[in-house]
Structure formats: structure tokens, C-alpha cells
Length: 272
Length: 323
Image 1: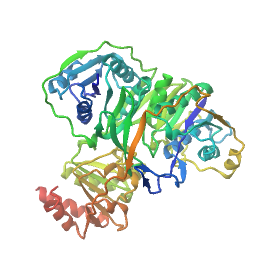
Image 2: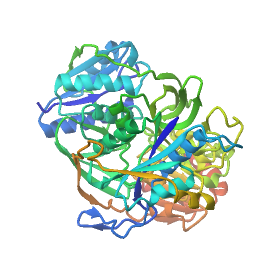
Image 3: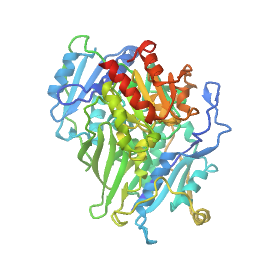
Image 4: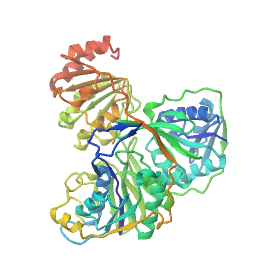
């Protein structure tokens, strides 16, 4: 099995935003990996590895659309345990999500992958479109917002628990298919590959790179493509007209007792 | 043509309450494009629900139906096929609906099949092809311009009023059943979070607890307050991740976005991602033992106290008032 995981670099979401000329000024931002993509890579690694053995059940390829000299996040995921990288050398901020989806779909086909894993959204643009778009372009089944995944190797299928508005939906997908992951996918027992014992508890969250992983990452291969190589001409059919800070909420007031709180809610806010 | 198509999710007999804000967004968009509003009901036998929707009208010119056994239960694969066919058949400028978990899967997939752009989770309709939405966990508001047509949209439920019936009854038009396919996917079922309380995104009052509640058992006192106020129970990501309460109670960038009249944040520090999910609330009350907690910066009323001391007292006073 070949698993392709899409990863994006974003301005550090813990830094405060700077606004200039009706746009976010990220010129001095620290760039980091999107957290949901870390969860997607963690999911791929849990599917691929056999706990207690060096055998791997799948090859994990990380893919990013980014300038080729700005791929520290790809190296980070190779250090975490992904097998190799693919970079499409382009400015992803200058193209729309349909173009990004076409590039991902082309790499998926070129590599002959069985599964695309992605984070459900990026913490900066919050588009929440890519996995669904790629699934559409590749004419594959999809499951967005996965909280659990179980791989049934015998049936070559996945069973996904998806976060939906009124609970958790269970959906089975034949492979190849496309899955976007939600937060709970990195809980200790969310991923089952049929080989790692079912009672194995992973540490919560995405794993950190080991020292050995960091050394190994430098030797792992990263293929570089261009949109032209992949036959895609990027478009920009959704553009930011302006980006501004939200209006600040007016400062509230502190009360010193529960009685005072209830009194304010009744007489002032008139909500009780 | 500059018509707008809104996909209306139903419960089998009529529009789901959650679909109504999406209809409002469609009405506003049609007013900007100068076109008609069209509604779309999908299902294995959509007739009854479509008739109820048509009767309510919502200012729509027509209610379209697509009937196919594979459209129930919902799958993004089959629904997208149907949406793409209807968008093409009607030649609409825009298609979309409420940003529900279903349409957040369908609209991007259908947009990809149509080679179309889209804007998700819009908060206002600025013009015929211009919208605002929040980005970066609500720390910025972006205005987007979409080029070309058709394009897709999803509307954030907390930012559009539910559509009211009116404008006269619409006619129902059955569209030819297209070839729809689940691509081999199968929905086994949905494990619903059973609750006698209103839905989080629809409730007038939301009472949320955070990491400081320490364990699920302690949410009981929050549930008491919730039920006295006829509200919905919520939680921060820290509380749902710790397994104190089910994950679908999560309020935040990674959970649900709510905007009730009254929001209680109890033992919640106020991480950016939580604030993104609740700062549209009309009145915010924060109760936290840490006076430095960022939640106090967005609260209308803040009380520095341990929940163990404050909540039982609060429940008692509210109960006394409610008689």
C-alpha cells in the first residue's frame, strides 16, 4: 500500500497576526506545519507500522505544494517517519484550491497511490476543501472528518468513524480512497491496521521526531515537480479582496460574587 | 441566467432547521445577482419533504427534486453526482447551502467536478460574487472575490437567520434521476448523541465546561444549569480530548461554531481556537479561578471563582428565579 499525505506550511498560528494594506503581513512570520497535517502523517504512520517489528505495511509519502527551498516542514515529516517526499515547486498562496487539488490528484496518479490522507483544514485559510476536491477529481470514494480508521487488509478497505453534526457516522470505503482527518484521530486507540494489537495504546497526539529520525531524514529522497511537469496550469479564481482584523469586543466587567452576576444578567443583560 | 441553487437537507418530512440559514444566504445572494432562488431536495423519495418545502416557499421560484435509491443514506459521492447534474441542467450561477457536515463534504466535491471555485463558511454576502468569511481561527475577516460561474458556497449557520416561510408557494419540479454512485462506499450507520436538549448551534443558551472541570462526572452541575435554562451543553477541546464529554459537544475552530444569546464558559481558559467558536455569542459569562485567563478578555461578565464554589450557588439562584 502507498499512502500519500498532503502537508502545508502556514504562518505560526500562535503568533499574533499583523495587518498591513488590507492583508495579513506574514513577511516576518515563523512558518510551521499545519497541525491537522501532523495528525494526517501520524495516522499514516500508525497504519503503516507494525508495533514491535521493523516491518512496514505501507509506504508513506508526504506531498507539499510549496517553493522548493521552503520545505522544512517536509523534512520535519520525514524525520517523524515518512519514507519520502514529493514537492511541487510553486507558490501555493497564489493559486486556488482547485489548482492545488489538481496537482495533488496528478501526483496521486503518477505514484499509483492507494490512499490519500489530509488534515481536514489548514489553520490559516480554513478552506476545508482539498480532500473532497481531490476525491472528486480522481472519482474516488471519500470520508471527511475522520476520528477513527480501521484498515481491513483482507477486503482492501477502510472503516472510518466520521465526525458529523449529530454524532459519529461509520462509513466503509474500498481502496483506493481519500480521507481527511479530524482531531480525535490522534487519540491513543483511533487507528487500527489489523496487525498492531488492538489493545495497543499510542501516545496521544502526533509523535515527535527522534534524533535518529532527524539524521535519517537528510538521506530520504524528495522528488521535485513543477505544475507544468504535472500538466496543470494553476488558476486563481478565488482571491482575497481584503483581510482585516475583526472588530474587538467591548471590554466586559468583572463581578465579585455569584449574586452580583445573576443580578447583572437579570437587570442589565436581561438574559435570565 | 444568474440563478442560485440551495441544497436543502430534510428530515424526510420537511427542511431540517439547520438548512434554513443556508436558504437565507441563498436569498441574499439571489438578491445580489438579480436571479431567482431555486431549492433542491435529494433522497430516495423526496416528494413529501419537497412538498413541505415548496409550501413554505421561502421566496424560491421552484423546488427541484432528484429521486434515487442511492441518495439515502447520505453519501458525499452520490449527492455530489446529483448536485452536479442539476447545476448543469439549470445553468445556475451559484450553488450551496448551510455549512453542515454533509454540505461541507458535498460542495467542494461537486465544485471540483464542475471545475468551479467555491467559498466555504461565508459569514456575509457582500455582492454577487463577493463574500466574507473568518480565517485563522477568527482572528481575521477575509473578503473574497470569486471569478466565473458556477461557483459553490456554504454559509455558516450562526451568521444567517433561519429563513421564514413566505413569498407564496413554489412549484415542485422533478429532475431526471441522474446516474449517481456511491463509488463502493457504504454508510453503516450514525451513532447519534442522544439528547433531550436543543442542538448546540440552535440553542439560545449554551453552557460549556473546560479542562478545569477535571472529569466528566463534574459536568453534572453544568447540566443542571443547562437544563434550567433550556440550553445546550458544550465543552472546550481540552475537555472533549480528555474524554470528559463526547467530542460532538466541542465548541471551537475544530468543533462547532455557536452564537447563542447567552454563553457560559466555565473553567475554560479561552484558547484562540475556543474563542473562534463562541465569540459571536451575544452575552458571554466567564467563570474561572485564574484571573489572568484570556477568556475574561471576551467576556461581558467575568467572575474569578472556582467552579466548585460558584456553580452550585449559580444553579440555586437561577432555580429560585425560574421558580
